Image (tube, rainbow, N blue to C red; front, side, top):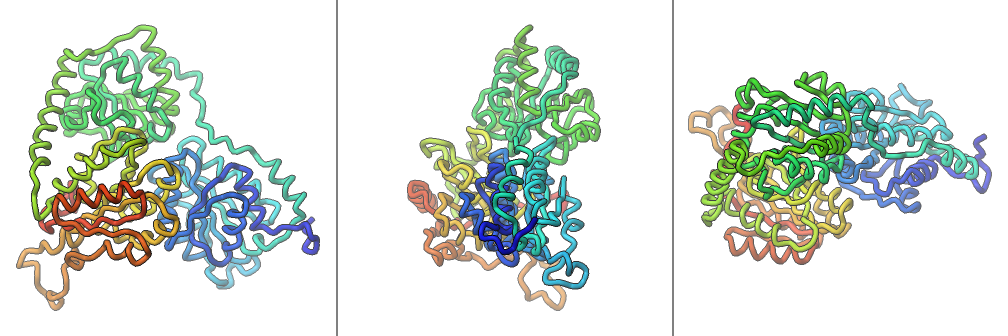
Length: 571
């Protein structure tokens, strides 16, 4: 029974914090205010690190990326109404990328619902499209079970976002602390487990291996789902057992080093256009993989699709579908192959063709990269950044990349050597994720330097969070490719410059040569502006060595890139 007068009573805020702590939560991201400020304070008192942002959108992106990087749900805390709506950016990003996350929002008093209360919103309904499970604690005693259910559901099956609604009257309710502790102790243990492989997988495993064994031009494709699953050891073993070339999706890069001799990244068109069997592990046949359709893929290719979601396999209708966790399934494939091994070998015509094309394309790229072009194009500074990142000793830095041209060029030039060290716009092509992802990476992997390579448009979405970098003294260096706007300033033809507002800037234009580096200086961070190779090398050397918050403002020729990057056909 709730007891408001007892000295040993605690309120709902403390009980939420106790529940989260008991279930292993160590970090939260968010923006405080009515009615959740006390919740954040109590969480900190119990050893949970609360990273306070300026905007729930960036905090939500941080929570979603934290879930991917750690395998445990990232926690976003927001206020009610508008705060919840802002947080939907992060929740929807977790949904699109299938990353575990829980958004916790305060809400209005239950007795005032429907009467126009302060920041009132039917938040359960608002999050519906992006939440695997939405819970509302209607009484203080329900809090521990609600917390446990959303945490567990976020990681079960295909990972994703869940939502917990905490009315302000429930947060104020009191409960005797001994009763609260009993309720917390009884909640379902948060395991974070992956679903076990089904016993019926044996026939699918045998069929998959048979297909790979008989294929003339097999290809292994893996994505961020395999990275999330921590399948790097199993994938490495599979590639090296069979000698099959592999192709990572953008965020699958690093699961095996980009420099691996069987990497088909530099021969992507040949690899997907000519392969006859494609084993796709932890990647969806969506727009990033051209839906698995001709003309990018051969019309006769047989797909073996490994996915944790049965619905995904039913949607794509592959030649063979295997429902299961990537790490588990690839391990079973290795075991099956080990009993009757096969390996293509370096002299295999398919392997030779991939290697030859990758070498040719790599040499063509290096011929462009070796030139020092000033004013900067995209390639010259990207090469300098690549070399600086590769020179970092110890664990590989986490690279965060967003923008049109900046991200596209970076995907081809920057080299990933370790898993989960590349974060970009992802499945949804989301702009604005940069600073949130940086903060998540710095918190999740404090031993790694974080390097963001951002277009000026992408940077602008969350630029104010550089203050957050400084406040928490995070080892993040943000490199802004400043070309004066979206895609590169004003690219209109004379015929397009007309109408009563023709003197206004173009819709794609920003202030030329903007001093983005000065923004972080205002908060005590280090800023650099660079226009030459030597200036950029010096700035990167100094900032990487310092491992302190910094912004490097790289002035780019506004006409160096292409409108819409590599997606011009969609604009």
